Length: 310
Figure: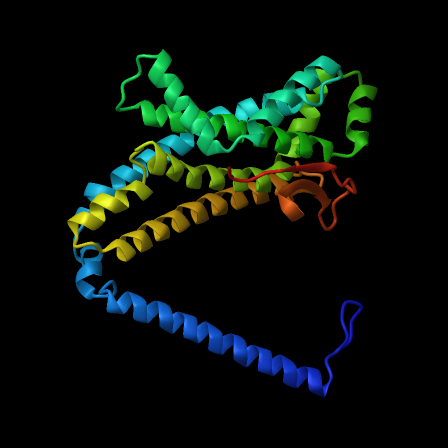
């Protein structure tokens, strides 16, 4: 069938497409065999290396659960601090006062430009030189500080994009009934923009959970990924099995996070708190506001700065 997007393939094109498909499947099968043969020749697929995860609770209670707890603690603290901080800076960037916009914009752009790993390393050194924080908990403080500084700046842009995605008439209507700017923001703009922000906020929450692993790699923070090394050493160098189990836990954790946020978003939309606009990561990682089917917003934001992990 011919559409406005492409022409229906002819006889030669169909043969060529079948050839490409066969070639792709053959290359994929060869890569899969190469990976399998390499792992099998090194004994990484032996049942003895996978058995501890199916026959004993010790790998979970001794290694994985403590690491997962630290990951959740660091991610939760970072999100709880970064979310309101990002909201404050996002609203400040929309201020009528130029100096407020300048200060907020400078802070946001500065911390968003620095990789989150460097922020963690700076924070760890600063805590070591200028505070009495114990070396046992210093990595946690450094990881949370780095994640808060970076992700608050990204969340500030998400908040700004969510508010700007609302139609201008919302503000005009609030002014018409005598609302001040602060009241308009609290009672009209922020409640409606929450559903538009949710997809981007959830994406950033997933980034926060995954970025805790940077602390384990560089600061000896005992999070989930760092549990692989002692666990592998204790169970006969089952590195592949350990990494696989940790990866499955990360996938399950982020899937649960995304599902919960999706449920919340649907509930808010059913409560008629939405204008139909959605803020998400656009091409190249930038933020953009788009019009959802049936929505009343046609604003496409000029948000050229990207979101994502550091």
